[in-house]
Image (spheres, rainbow, N blue to C red):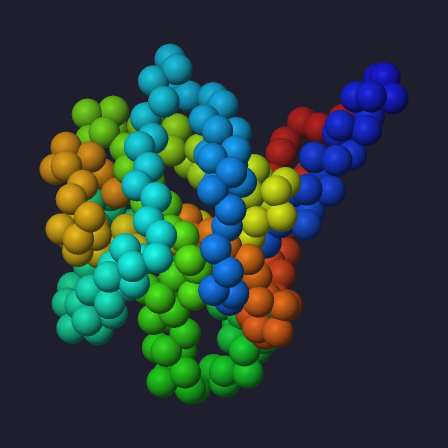
Length: 228
């Protein structure tokens, strides 16, 4: 392995290690040049037969506020209506990881396990986009089915890494897709596209306690069989 290759790998490893889901943003917007560069990098995402299933609606300013207000009015009183079904259930280690993530986040925020009001208010922060000034809504053609959604997942991962490389903070949000009917109506997404998720973008508020929280990853030997 050459020195140049080692340096590139080290830089990527550092970038992936430093990235986290930001849950408290400053109102400061991202420069348009950086936004264009970020999404241009994400466009290099590999996809099935190079179909590039993703389509992105990037909202900023008043458009973010309008979508947030509509969701906040709708979510507490309406049933979920996603384009793509959520998990049937979490079992075993998947449930353990999910619970650990939630408990650690609530601990960082000082929300007790029996504080149902506090938990509800934190859940609703999803629909305020945690104060982010930019929100990207990711959609996939319904006709491409699972493979289109899988390609969009790859796109989101690349987008998050690209944001980190530019010093932009981000969080991928599946919660928004659970109310796809509201999102579709607000921003005019065609009926033949499925809403996959949102990615909120901006700059982290260093004083927000949620931004001190970090998730833990499973050991690679548990996740990958056959490693040397």
